[in-house]
Amino acid sequence: MSLTTNLVETKPQPTGQTPAAIDIRAMIGLFTAVVLILDSHSWFYRTTSLAVFMAVAFSSKARTSPWLWLGISILWAHRLIFRWYDNEDHIYLAIYWCTSLGLAYAGDDDLKVLAVNARLLIGLTFAFAFFWKVSTPDFRDGALMHYKMLFDYRLRQVVGEDIGRLSAQQTSTNLNRLRSIRALGSDVNEVRLEYPPSFSFVASLMTYWTIAIEGLLAVVFLAPDREMTSRIRNGALMAFSLTTYAIVPVLGFGSLFMTMGLAQCRPNQHRTRLAYMGCQILLLLSLAPTLIAHLH
Amino acid sequence: MSFIRKFAVPLVLITVAVNHIYRHFALQQSAWGAGCGFGMFSTVDYHDTRFYRCYLRTKQGRLPISVATELADADRKARVLPTADNMTKLASQLAQTLPDLVPQTVECDSLSRTPNDCRIDSLQLELWRMQIEPATHTLRSQLLRQVEVPCQKGFAK
Image 1: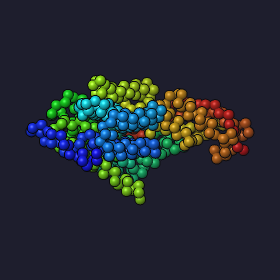
Image 2: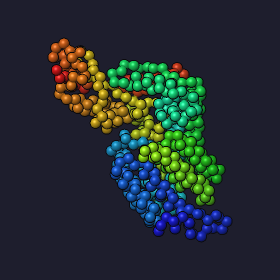
Image 3: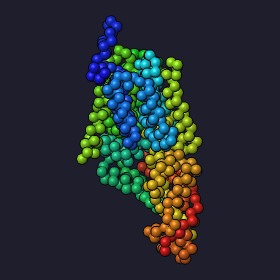
Image 4: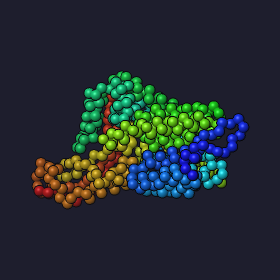
């Protein structure tokens, strides 16, 4: 069965309920396959993720096959065991998610199981992220945000220079001083950094915003599923993903959150699902400048 | 069966993350990324900001060298989990990559007085971490761990 024919669900709907216009399983499968492609950094992972994408795009049986998702989990999990020191958090989360898909499709109440898994995985991810941040002194005092806004070019360009008013001269001085510590044979262990008061203000603001939004996401995703909680969690997750991953394009993470967000929507939240799909497309479009620059 | 399908994966996530938190506090494992406790963007000290200072020890003093790029795997592992074992493995592998007679580019001649002075006694590997004090605008490096392995090599005269 092709994807096009699946875009409209043909099952009769209960009275008073808007017909679902999207095949949720197809969208979850396709988005997960896109996440796997984004997380692929070698020919083995590219090949397997493309194979999953093709299977999911062209076969409705494949996209709900527990064997496909459990198989890809097993194929990818060896990197977590044998090269555990070389994987970032979103790789783990993607593999956890594929395993959840496999387990969900092994029974009848697949969408219900997927929703529970998605909510718990997102909630736990942010609960642990929140724990690290509040328990680490150099996050709480703004040191991490200062460091990233000074030396991570993505945050420096968008936040440090444009909003924090860090000048090009100060950037150049700071980079040279960092190099002086790390240079071969250096015995320099302390340097002074240059940045204006507005820079520290922005760093503090980002620190408090991060603690607040990640704490909120942990609470609302781990709280019992109620209509109001659900609205807050969807809005907060989309706001977090768009504001974070547009600046720091870890699209494997952003795209995965949108996929899991889509999967945990309540049955009547058709517009919210469309919003998740829109955010997913926006995040993928943010890759365009990088791809064009790469091609040039 | 339904319980496993709903809660098995979240329970695995919790187990792995708690293990990472333990290893971070007990073994100084990098909070960020590897190990998966979801500690990304939480601290300045993580494997990408940690860096090495490496020296060849001779009778005349110590000479800095860089960590060979072909040891990227052991290099990353020791920065992520800087146990004495991982550091010693990296230092030993680095010592093995040195030729029997180290080329003169390390300027042994400027140090040595006799051929015996040109012998390398050991290789010293130090792992450093970065710290920032926002209030004082200070960027500081701090020694995290160091190891020393014997190295029976010499300089080309």
